[in-house]
Image 1 (spheres, rainbow, N blue to C red):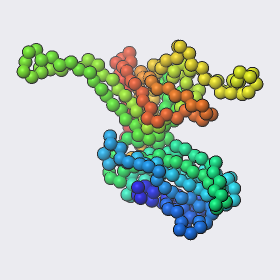
Image 2: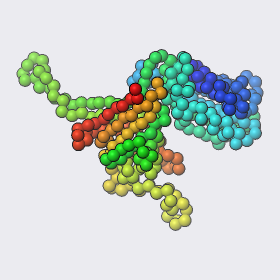
Image 3: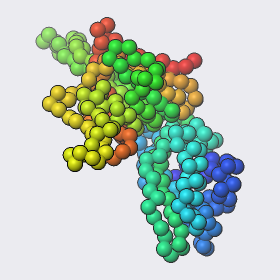
Image 4: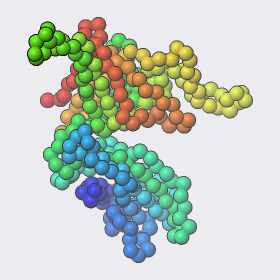
Length: 304
């Protein structure tokens, strides 16, 4: 984990805007033996391990702690710059010893005041996927997902979500073997094919719930007291996944080239509605893809 911590720190201390807010010497990957200077930034690892499905690739949760002796606004000013440098910036963090496939913010907490040092503290967690070898994984940054019933395209009006992290396309076939009383099977007949698209992290626009699942979404509703403003989701007996065309468009972190995956008839089978005002974030979201009227299932295009 030392390699990824060093890559993150090197990215932070190389930015003159950030070091004007926090001296490079006070951006560290370990706690100071003496009382720290404030403000300061401390990097650490909460957890991590190898991704068994991709040999040589490691997943880790990186913790970034910010401290200020002035006020909460100062830690937020510092963190805003850190997020600009790290969130969805895999290629910028990659260096000669670490190939970063994905790095994105997963949680931020500023509700902390350290009484012993009388400092304000902000803690941010980042999910990072990286390798220290030449392993190439399909990971995306700046990803956008578009959907439409019949004419999907890169169009802001059709954007339903953003995504980043690992992207995989899996095909599964059902078959029947016919041995015709022979000692060895004479042949196998493949009669069904199913494709799955899995993405590490997807953040849905709440307004897309009606298009995807038939969930009515209203941001200007009220509670039953008739006066308290509220956001309302309505699920009915008719709520089911909708067959749509999906277009996944983003940039590969390995080489910076654009990549598109188009599913001509697919559904998102999982549905989770959090009780919060944030956008709907799904970890490892899956699309179930079928053949359209022309028997096309999925197409993949990569920039030359």
